[in-house]
Length: 400
Length: 237
Ligand SMILES: Nc1ncnc2c1ncn2[C@@H]1O[C@H](COP(=O)(O)OP(=O)(O)OP(=O)(O)O)[C@@H](O)[C@H]1O
Ligand SMILES: [Mg+2]
Image (cartoon, rainbow over all chains, first blue to last red; front, side, top):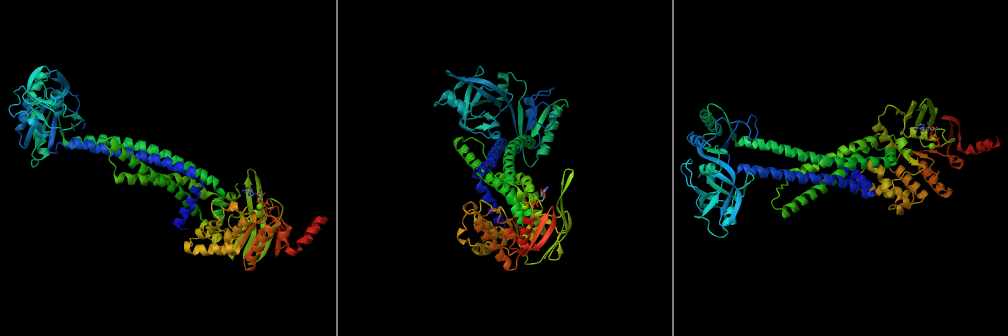
């Protein structure tokens, strides 16, 4: 029996029950649509988050206070015996291979000018921040280099904050109030967008020691370190670790996080997300598979006489089986194709109307969805097809 | 040649054992025209199904053209059914969603004949049963007699050696029944073996040989032309 003939024979019976065929195609299509949409959202989110992390460049690591025992993102847990201090940051600058060191703190503060005020996230940093965080100054200048320990009554505003407080007026040279202190505006940043979830435009940058005083902090939030690639990540991190341990009474009460570790943790988080997405998709597909299974089971029951006839005409059991398998597979394949189209279409529409939506459609995922739908059809068809093949032709012919 | 040797077909229904066939010994020569008669439940269809390789005897030996078929696997039996045996059923067994052409084409499709070759053969088969103009009609658009003629075209399209017909005229009026019988006998005249089951003595009488079953056994064998005497004798009893 030729494949095209099997297909034609199967199609003729699907055509004879249009509504039922349509419904079971839809049951798969809906599953595949959701799988395609979910995977494109998942993939989009993954790339978005990875992009956020890799904009730092790869020759970088960070040091945060507290010890994290397992490989996880450091939290606020863990007792510190010695605080992570500006002196630590300065000492690290002397380590062989280290290029830049950026000590930083972070806090919430109200920034006021004239009658206007705005509560924003404020970063205490040094002159190294623009280069490390890939930011640039639009007007005026950034915090000048110099002794980080020495406070300075200066501030650099993010583009949005400057706009909200000063409108079209020039901000450079003016005095603003930050957490009660009067600081002179040195510069205004160019728009930067978000960095690790923080709006880098609706913010202000203060000298780190000034910020520590204003916020009454005795410890750094983190120290970012870049190193010369030729020295190598391993050697640099180990040298820095040894130095800090020595400074902290031989206690490792800090955590060194390299890019690889960050990406690794992120990867495992995103794997969980993918797994959840896959689970939802599998559930949707299972519903479709049950739809096809039911439809094929009914079809075998209805066509018992036809099966008996085909056997009498000399069809082998394997031919009967493949006839029904083909029908189930075709149903699922058609559903898969329809679902993929709908999924891609919805994703494109979504991207058009919600520009920020992290949607990423890959041919691989769509192809996989199609393969999975066909496999679903095969799996759903095995039972009914086997039943059809096993029918006793004499009994099948006699059935009504 | 069909040789049946002590054929039994037994059904186990709970505690009771039912012998649908209870020791059939029969030889049917190539080109013979045989009618099988007997009361309802006497085993006529069961015997036809065994001859047609749709059913296997519980006991006994069946030799087709000298070869014992008991040892053949299902695929081998399917191949013999496809090429060597044509079935005609009382209820036609046409597939409703296919037109006459599609129904007649089925055996060719199952046999893997190329589409180009099929077309001509289907037209010829329909022509041979006088339904060339009805090729596009669905079974529901045909009369009972026409449907049975489509079924005959389907049964004969692969040139089988044997035609098995289980009450082929059972659902037909006498004139369509006559057409169907004439067609079947026409094929037989060209050398096919024709075995038919019937309740109708008028049909059986046209056979060369009549076998009468009762309770799964052959109780009488006689030439068809003697059937009239039997009927008279039975009526006189
Ligand atoms: N699958 C089965 N299970 C149990 N008994 C069966 C089965 N098939 C047939 N029989 C029995 O076998 C016997 C012979 O049946 P068969 O169909 O051959 O009779 P028949 O001579 O063709 O009758 P009719 O003229 O009514 O068609 C009957 O008693 C029937 O009940
Ligand atoms: Mg019968």
